[in-house]
Length: 251
Image 1: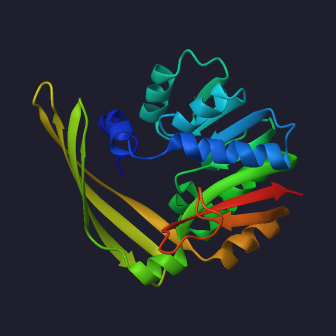
Image 2: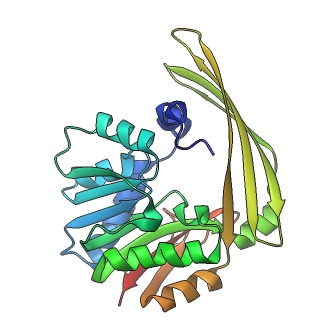
C-alpha cells in the first residue's frame, strides 16, 4: 500500500482535482444546521491532505483531522497552516483516543471500506462512538454491495493533467466475492510537466464493500440511529452509485 508514500501524498490533490469538496462540505453543513445547529466542532477521520477539514474550518467549525499517513498530514499542515480552526494529527484510527468528544464526526472518501475484517469494522464504529457527543451527527460513506455486484470491478485508466503534473493511473482489481473484498492494484505514471521528470508509482489498496443491512446492524450495536442513506449530493441512492453516503445520529 502506498498511501503513506511521500510521492503519493504530493500528487493526491492532483489525482482527485475533479472531486467537488466544496459541494460535499456545504451539503454536510446544511444537514448539521438542520439536525444539530448548536454543533461547534468536527472530527475528520481519514482526513488525507485536509481539504474537507479546511473547508469545515473556514465555515467556523473547530476541526481536528486525523490520518494514518504522516505524509498526508504533513501536506495538510503545509497547505492550511493559516487556518486557525484546524488541527491535524498523525495517528492510527484504530487506536485513536483523543479523550474528547465532538458534535460531529465525519469519515469521508470511503474510509469505512478500508476496514476489511469484522473486528476492524467494529473498531471503526467503536472509535466513532468514543468521540461523539450524545445527539451528535455522523457522516460517512462506503462501497455499496448492490452496485459492485451489478457493475463488477474492471480495469480502468484515468489521466489527469494540470500545470504541474500529467498523471496516468491504471487500476486492476482482484475480486474476492466470498469475502466481499476487492484488491485494487494500481500503477501510476507521473510526469512533472516543468522538470519533465517521470516517476512510476505502484501499489495496492484492499477495499471491502457492504450491504446496507450490515451497516445498520453495526450502527445499532453502538446505539447510533440511521437517519438517511443516499448518494452524496443527491436525495436518493443514485443508479450505479459505487459509494453510499450515510447520515446518522448518536442516540
